[in-house]
Image (cartoon, rainbow, N blue to C red; front, side):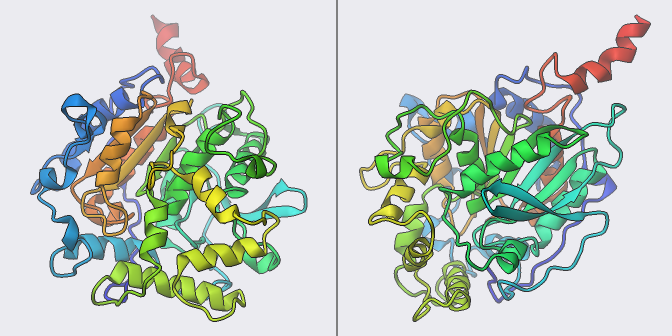
Length: 450
């Protein structure tokens, strides 16, 4: 999603970008408690010229109602799309969002990463780039963090490469994944189309199993940007969801994998700038937008039109609703009303009186949502609404003063990298437990000498 006014930039990890917290402030049972104590250590890395960040409980006011996020940060929500009034948010968004490119253009190789193909269903493989930890711990094992792109994204996005390299440099394996119908997955299989979450969330479970079958991979974690963040949240829910569930219609249930007791992505899930009200975005894109009035919506519509033209859809335009319908018309998940059923499945907040199913209360792995008050695409007020509805201590949220939409590295690079590295850290991270293998190994010398 290019905005035209700014160029995509790389924000590579540097040695002083990682401030490691001293100890694990949780026992793996509360991402909220972990976030409070970790943020206290990391907050000096944020610019000091704005209101303080709002964490999970601070997003909820008296009576359990969401606080006014925009009032706290002094933001006018009606002007978030304006270059004049939200220059920082728009520039941070654009510098991290990725440049326009042909949907099937080859992607330059990354040093020390291998191109791999991961089987996720009968006859379906997904492309990915896999890098090993440098160095791994003494056992030769490392957790592997899977990175998901945003809407219609692939591994050409510089922020994906930058994060993958940073993870490997700090003791993690990293896997940058491309969904069906994107990147190298698209180049290899023109007959596969995108399903906006119904099949892709199941694919993510298969990716986790594939990684855990590899020698040297201890646990898996998951981090997603934008719509990829929604995929990450849904993957955390897919295999632990109650059956039946209000979000799953009878027709759609036939395409979902059965829920199983096993949890995937036990190292944790992180959702950066999720689109918590995707259906509202679909409605917004039913009308054309000018680059002057709303550069984000205009840029997104140009991306949609480009994809429609490339895939051979008739009369390409910027309607996300029409793109969804066209993709499903060519998908194995194709029946009258399927788009409505998938919206219901993927819904994270109530929409026009329709239920969201309280999915995040079911999650069994630490899950962290990070958003920006000046996000011009997905309003930060949605995060407060979500926080007011979710009771699960494993689900935490933070709204930062800046960062635009997925532009956290452009806003506060050291905080961005430090938060991610600490969150997934097997010893001090949100999923760390007293009996975790890495934590036990780390404490063994001290125990032996006492």
